[in-house]
Length: 139
Image (cartoon, rainbow, N blue to C red; front, side):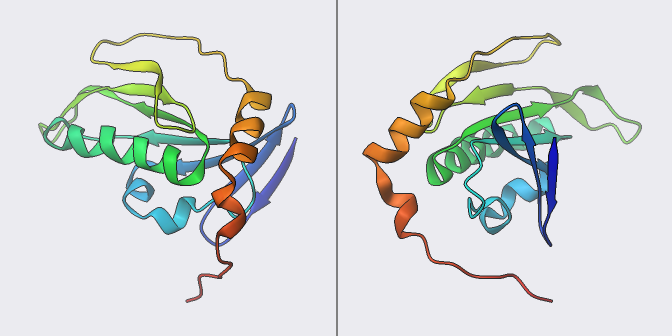
C-alpha cells in the first residue's frame, strides 16, 4: 500500500486501485476531488444530515461524472446529541453517474463489484480527462 498526501487529499494505492479518500464537507468543493492523480475510486465518509440529503445524492453523482471515477459515499444513520437526524443514503456510483448500489435509509452492509478495466476503457472512449488543466492550490 502506498500513500500520497497532498495539500487537499490523500490518495492510497491498494491492490492496483488508486483511491482518493475525503470527508463529507469536501464534497461541496470539487477542486478537492479533482482527479489530477488519475485515481479510479473516490471515497467520502460523512455525517450528512437529512435536510440536505438531496445535495449529498446530487454532489456524489457530480463528483463521479466530472472525475470519471467510481464514487463511494458512506453516510451515518441515527441522531446526534444536537438533535440532527442522519438517514444514510450510502451508495456506490460508476464513472457515468449510474448507481452500482442504490442509496438506502436503513443500516446495512452491501458489497459492490467494481470493474477497473471497464473504467479504463470508459476513460479511453470519453477522453475528456486528457484535456484537464493543471493547477496547484496554495495558501
